[in-house]
Image: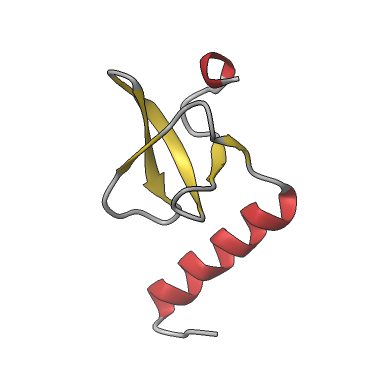
Length: 72
């Protein structure tokens, strides 16, 4: 699965319990970036999966709310 993910794909990292944008691989890790920007984190490529439509929408709404200063 990890080798089939294209950069820019939104994936779910169950260890971090959040959605991130797949950026690239670095050694044995997948590098993910928070939706809307921020600091990248390393994820286990064996555990990440493509985010569901609901997970993508939730992450995008959180990013928009963060930028606007609104929190839910």
